Image (cartoon, rainbow, N blue to C red; front, side, top):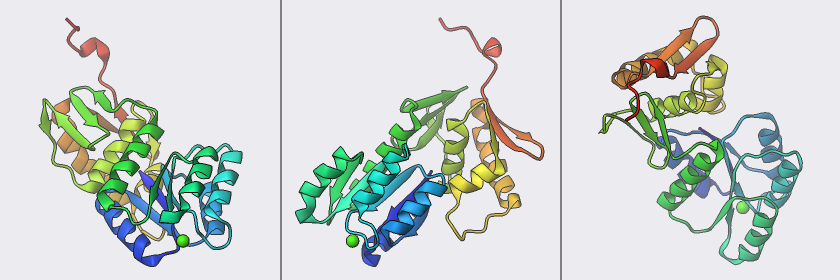
Amino acid sequence: MRILIAEDDPIISDGLIRALRKAGYAVDHVVSGAEADAAIASQPFDLMILDLGLPRMSGIDVLKRMRARRCKVPVLVLTAQDGVDNCMRCLDAGADDYLTKPFSLPELEARARALCRRGTGLPNMIEVGRLIYDQSDRLARVNGQVLELSAREVALLEVLLLRAGRLVSKEQLVDHLCSWGEEVSNNAIEVYVHRLRKKIEPGEVRIATVRGLGYCLEKPDPASQPAAV
Ligand code: CA
């Protein structure tokens, strides 16, 4: 999952970036409305956290422009205490949720998770083989046992699960896992995939390598599954 933060207050943005990266999201940051507008129009994001009071184009104009382009990326608006009226306008303009400053980081993370989850259009619990992934707490279980996954491995599993049965190119993985300026080699991606593959194997879930193209999380063949009782 990749998140764009548009916030010009460095104290707020630093805290947000640190917390969300720690949670395994790829996070990019811009400090003006114009940059937010350009970034959201050209890069694949799963969520935008948008401050309303931005220089060079207000948050609400960024929002209106992206919705006019039919961009469906979920948007969580941040606003000052006295800006609640603005928030109502934002919801009307297509924002999905809002928080007034100051806010608690755990609350912001919970709302971000909820919006990312809704944005996938998939049920809360994604089940492939004997692997069950819960989008609300971002935990993967096999036979009821929680898998110990690093934040990066969770992010990788999410990208592959959301596209289960389809080819995911290395470029797509890099787009969803890495922030701007973060150099991640193809070798590093291979290492992450290798580690994740080992951990989810007991759930009868396979990550196939499509040589030269990318990876595919394969759904088990229904014919080989025990019949439902
Ligand atoms: Ca501001």
